[in-house]
Length: 198
Image 1: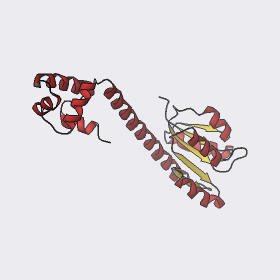
Image 2: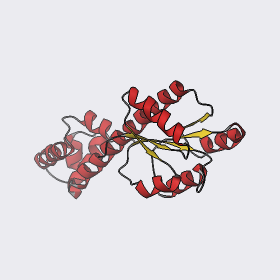
Image 3: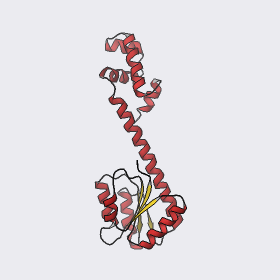
Image 4: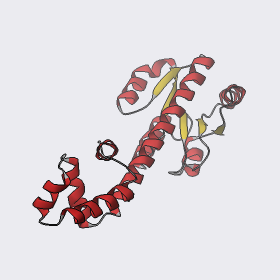
C-alpha cells in the first residue's frame, strides 16, 4: 500500500506552500498539485490519506474533480476549501459525501487537525476493508460440507444435532468442524460468529 498522504489540490501556490509547510511541521506527509487535472492524472486506487480540494480553480473546478473521483469510486475523504460565497455549495458537497469544508481565510491549525482526522478515518476504513476481504478469502477455501456445518454451528447447534440433520456420523462432523475452524482461523463458535458479524 502507498504511504498515506494529504493530497493538496489548489491553484494558489501560496496556499499550497503554507499548508504543505504546516502539515510537514506536524509530521503529516503531503503532496501538492496545482490543478484538479494534475491530481486526477496522478490519482490511483491505491492512494491513501485524504484530499484537500479547492472548490474554485482555473480549469477544472474542485466540484467537478470531486464528481470525477466519485465516478472512479475513490474512497479518500475530501476536505473542500471554499471562498465566502461558496458555503451553500460546500454544504451540498457534504451531503454528497465530502468529509468537511473550510472557508478562506483558513484557520490553519483547525484545518490541519481535521486533515489528521480524515487520514485516521481513511486508515480505519482500509483496515476494516482488508479484514472483510481476508474473511471472504477464508470462506472461499471452505468445502460445500464445511459451509453447511458452519451455518449450523452459527445457529448454535451441537455436533450430534448437526450429524443427525446432515445424516453423517458425529466423527465426520468433528473433522469438518475442526477443518472449518482451522481455515477460518478461530478456536470457538463464538469467535466464528464474531468474525462473521455484518
